[in-house]
Length: 248
Image (cartoon, rainbow, N blue to C red; front, side, top):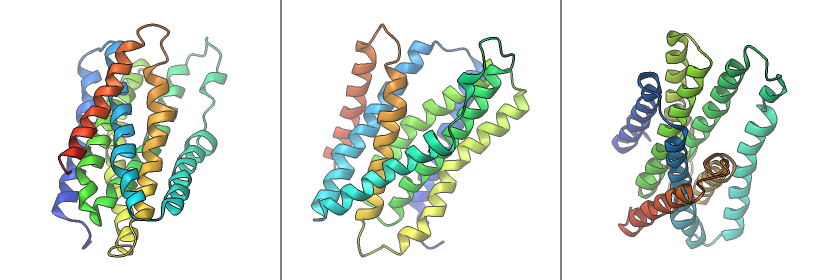
């Protein structure tokens, strides 16, 4: 456990609390979907900014762009396989009259988002050997984690899950990112003082997947009101630009 620094512990606690807060809000109050889409768009901008403005430049500066690009693509494809192939659900195969349709979607969403949380934890674990990435990765994960927990709890409400079951699933979801980071730290410790291209590029590939395959399609799936989510994306990118400029 030598790689678990005080900084990383604070990040793990912060991510967990953000997920708990995001999941609690829909259980206490009903929110409009338009407002949620703005948060999703902001999260997409944060992930894009973290990948393109911070992680990728560090990979290039390390002097092995081909290796970095290969690992980044591998990270992207790994999450793609996990979510869209191995864990692909068939909720839409249930006809509109299916009485348990929302429950199926809720459980499927829980599985998919839990895998996402685990892979985000792998990215956060990079900070054990590269603390300079800490703020950028932490802010990116927080922006997504809160909104994802919010969405998941909203689906649970629609599916009319018992409150105890919903709380248990949300607690499990909230713990996945810290768990992923703790799993990753021993592996990254072997790279300490040598080559950080692999974990950095892996984090970048994961971030690009979350932004392009999950967040952006969700933010822009409505036929109207496209300008607002675009502004949300720009604000997210701007936040990461300012963090990068501040030397985070």
